[in-house]
Length: 158
Image 1 (cartoon, helix red, strand yellow):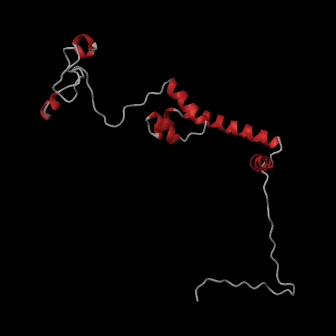
Image 2 (cartoon, one colour):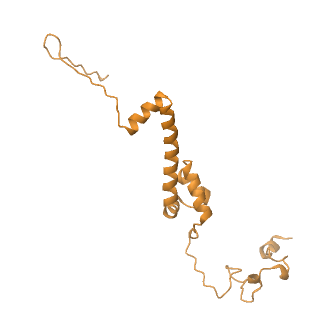
Image 3 (tube, helix red, strand yellow):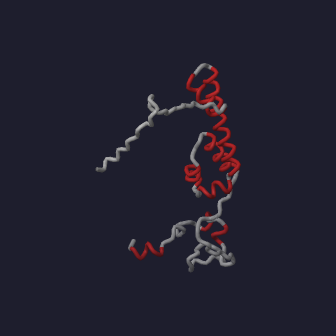
């Protein structure tokens, strides 16, 4: 087979007519233009870019499940083959509910650890949930004889 033969050879050449889908057997299919296999009576306008995304139950469930384990939005979008903007546009509720589920699950574990005596978990819980904080107070006073404290600034430049 020469290079010229490859250019005119179609993957449909070896398909028998009785096994071809009906749409491919239609008489109004034009093989002469760039839109091969598209019926002539169908108006197709190339708008460029990706085709529109159509969410369905499977993709909604996948987004929710990935979100519940803390998967980044960019990574979820990659799995679906869409942009992060498209992900947030069509799956806002699934992302929000998944994040809430993930945070609740971790909070439940942290809470159990704190109740079981894990000091680090107790401290973290009290600081983040009960707004406890550690404070330090530093007082600077003058010299015992009442003279001001001398401050020398060292810059490293002579």
